[in-house]
Amino acid sequence: MALDTRQTSMAQWESIVAQRQRSRVFTDGITNKLVGCFHSDYPDDVVLVRVYGQKTDMLIDRTSEIRNIQFLHKAGLAPRLWATFRNGLAYEYVPGDILSVDMCKDPAIFPLIATMMARIHRLDCGPDVPRVPSLWKKAKQFMAIMPIRFDNPEKQARYRLDQEYLLLQSQLSAEGSPVVFSHNDLLLANVIYNADRNTVTFIDYEYANYNYQAFDIGNHFAEFAGVTEVDYSRYPNPEFQRDWLRVYLETFNEPTVSNGPGYSSKVTKDDIDRLYVQVNKFSLASHFFWGIWGLIQAEHSAIDFDFLGMFLVLNELVWKLWHGY
Image (cartoon, rainbow, N blue to C red; front, side, top):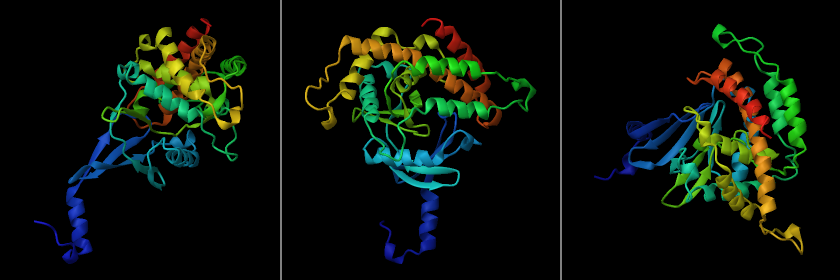
């Protein structure tokens, strides 16, 4: 029997909504807490509510995050932002599946990811956002707030990383990687694949900013190893990387009005080889960056995750791999 809305009071409406309101807690994130809210009669119309992790304001510029979401949504590349509040925000649900360690190498899926990243990298945020790489400033910010001494005796760890930072900065800044608008945190859980539409959507733009092109790609490749059950043998091999980079460059090099006559968008072997070297060097900067992040989270986060172990593994990995370049 249909409900006669003309005879339904506000109190009755609130009761009906409360009775039929449902929620689902998503457990994939290691920074924030995410809840999907929906009406039982319309289970596909979901609003995602993200509650910021404890003391994450030390790490993330929330004003910039909101700007990023709105900017990218306007460009057709991000979900709609519905609301913001003091310790979180609500945004549009994107139907699909988060990437698995197998899906990220699927020949039907990885070209979609490479193309989407290239589209984002071609964006211009305008004069209000300086086109300078955020990597070094953000890493320095993290290093400044690392705990000198942990409260928990089992977490006693303090590493002097200044020399490591300076080495990476001097070596990688000379690589000549273009500075582009980047996601900067494209772990697998931040990519949603919709099989019905054959599309991918990137989510969670907390760290998005201008950065080195090779950092964004290298960071994504590093995430192929997984998060909770890390296996670095899953890092993509050279053949896969070159296939991925070719697809990326085919979109990134598409001509624009500013290119002028004589511009060639053809992707050459030299183009791919150059980017391949840059990407694998910058993947080390990714390990360094998220290792420091993990050290801070080990002290402050309420989420059950071995952040200190993450720091130790990544910090060791950086220098083991660095000697291979």
